[in-house]
Image 1: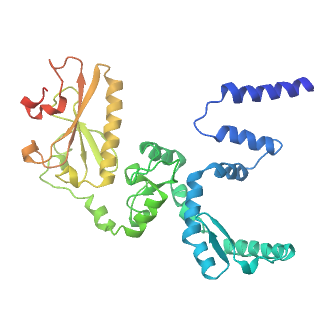
Image 2 (image 1 turned 90 degrees about the vertical axis):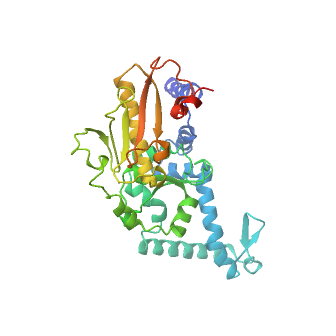
Image 3 (image 1 turned 135 degrees about the horizontal axis):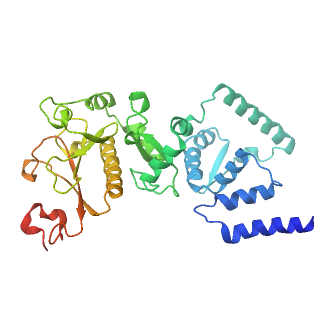
Length: 335
């Protein structure tokens, strides 16, 4: 029995010291909590243990404390603030006995439980995104943003990051990844408070097409679609600069790249990344890419429906490629 015990100890010790690869504190913390709990722990208990170390969540609730209950309790003379980060009862409540405190704690518990029974959606402000989206999709969006808020740039390690619907679900927005963005809780809240966008008109505008536009009528012009998502399309250029030269366009008829909506930019970038990976697997001679877009007649735009060029490049496909896209003005390419 002693030998079995020693082997188990050594195996766990060896895992912690040599085999464990850490991208966060979760593994050693999980093991630590199991050891403290005699080898068995609930999902809720381990989640609470994680929260003790999650400064972004602590900051979120610190903000709640400052903006909601502390103001009301101070107004009623129940608490006072000591410095920036500490609170206490006012002097009036210093003489409450331990028996009285026990009764009051019990009353607080009853109030909390009764409220939660009546208002089961109390924490929907934190759970809404989790309920609508799969964990893998949430991870994909946060990874796409490099675990930073896409509005202010703050890291997920400093502030909790939510996955937000750019066009809200209740305004007709979809769960397509082009309509999702990573926002910290502050930017997400401020967006709800200040954004007056007419989402109904914006959503309707996605359906805008021009019967005279070749890109709005790809099938009628015998152009094969090679990839698409909710808001964008990819197809090979009929006048290819190199083999597999691809055009990526928004489905909406719009001439100016700078007037695209963020979901359209997301959708276009998604297809650029998708096609880039596809072409690299399809053709191992591809060693680079040029990405370009012409905006306005003086910049060379000839079809006034936004289109982004994804041009595969290969070793020695031109004598001296230095300067790349600077070649739009030939005598400025070399420098």
